[in-house]
Amino acid sequence: IPFSHLHRLARLLANNAPKTHRQFLRLLAVLTYLKHCGGNIQQHEWNALVDHAGKGWRKTRQEDFTNAMNVFNDMRAGRLPGSWDLLPPDVEVLEEGPSVEPDIYTYTSLLSIAARAMDGQALRNISTLMSNAGLAPNRITHLALLRYFTLQKNLGGVRATLLKMRQQDLTLGMDGLNACMWAFGNNGRLDIVMLIYQLLRHNMLPETYRGAGDITEVAGQLGEEFIFVEPEMKPDLATYTTVVQTMAYRGHFDPCVNVFMDMLTFDNTGNDVPLKAEEATLPTPSTGTMPIFRAFFLGFSRHAVSPSKHTKRSTWTLKNLRQIFDLFLSLPEDSNPSHTTIYLIMVAFDNASGHDIDLLRNVWNAVDRRFG
Image 1 (cartoon, helix red, strand yellow):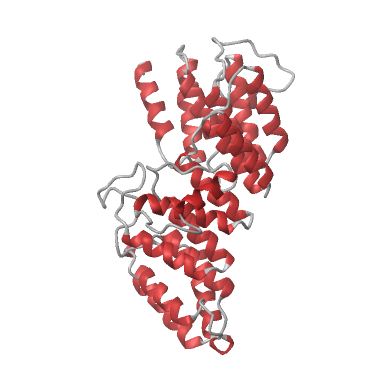
Image 2 (tube, rainbow, N blue to C red; image 1 turned 120 degrees about the horizontal axis):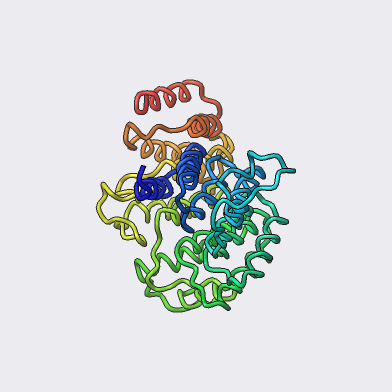
């Protein structure tokens, strides 16, 4: 097989989504065959293999980071990829070709995998290796650390990471802003989540109010947290989903609905997304997305109470649940709600109706008729 064909196949596999464990094995097989036949694995191909080695499962495990480090060691030693796993530990392996020095993308992939595996020692080790190599962290490197501190519920680490990005003059980007919303929301700082969203919404629909709590004051408050929203940034699907998930989990119904209505109303003009509805991942007007509805149903399953316990301030009510459910039924027939989503729907209606068996039966039949 010509080497050019193998390189092209490796590139197609590296760029294919989602990154499954089976895809990692396929990429490993192609690159192993390439090197075994006398070809050279290029830097970006090694990086893709390292990245794939730590992905493919729903939750990143310690073994996934170990797999990525094994590929990393093969890369630096010039061995066949995967040979580190297959050979006994007491066997000395001679180099089979030129070694490849890791670059910032290699280390960033390893940091990201270690962060998802919640391995603090591995994060420190990779950071030390990167520093010894004289490589400065880039934006993606910092976002990987941001994820780690978020999962650790360490707001101090989140703020320190944001400060370092500011000192290096690195912009957050939309993925960074969404990560910040998740980080502060995961730590109970819902005010910061809504302030970020307010600024993003202002970029799409400018606010004219001037006074206490206006957009200038909002920007100043976020600046104290080292969060800066550029004027060209606008909410994207991840933004809407993050806000609704965060607020629904915490029991704040009105912000969920307001953000949801924004999502249904505004044109699909998010950052770097297609504008045509058939090509876009953002919802078109008068539709929603499965993660958004699942977040609503989770909120109702956690916070809804029977009608006999309602107060004037109750919002997670059966009436509101019915309205959300009717919109849910307008999703395409092939949307295929998961078992978890269906479970949340039934629990939500059970809690909101005061255990009305007839209603639950009707809800079940409605879901079955729509989605099969």
